[in-house]
Length: 138
Length: 94
Image (tube, rainbow over all chains, first blue to last red; front, side, top):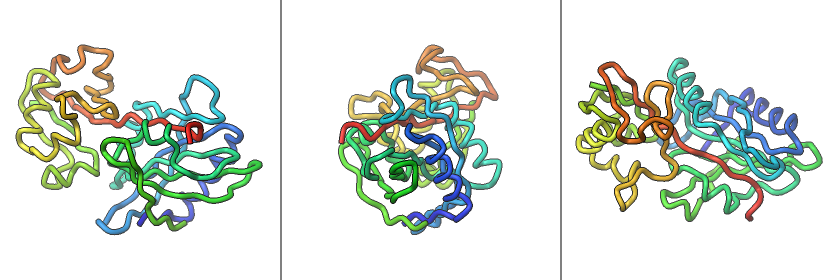
């Protein structure tokens, strides 16, 4: 299960709304006790995709490196990635899957007409062929 | 010796250590030392052909080894190696 603290959740939704109609992305920092991941800090990151960002996002590895360093400095862990799907549901698309990493939770926020609609979390496998839903509490 | 920083989800393979000092004069040698010491880590980083998985980026200090000499990138004492995932996606392609 992944639980997102209110302050972090507000940052994620705010980032997704402010970048609408483009996709947003960011990093989630927190703790993992083996059963529950708890997101305490969300870091909005720039969508670095070079084309139309309405339906694509890309994270710069350097930005993730900085996020990981920030996590270490705060005594937290980088435990997940979030991004938005503007005007569509919070599924894990083929594009999401083929560009994923099995080490992290992937939270997808559905933003419709500029407002938050719903969200899901996914855990992709090593071969990037399948992602299972993870219980998400926010 | 170079220090390799271990991402949180991979620390289950490194006896919970968040950083490991390993011998090696290149990035490839250092990663080889790391995955020899922690064999279960190997399949997280390398595919069946022995190549780094597509979602694995490696940095030496602040430099991406793709823009240096890849796994032949030389290391000197005190260098820090980071394993950074490559992540993208998008709603298109459902």
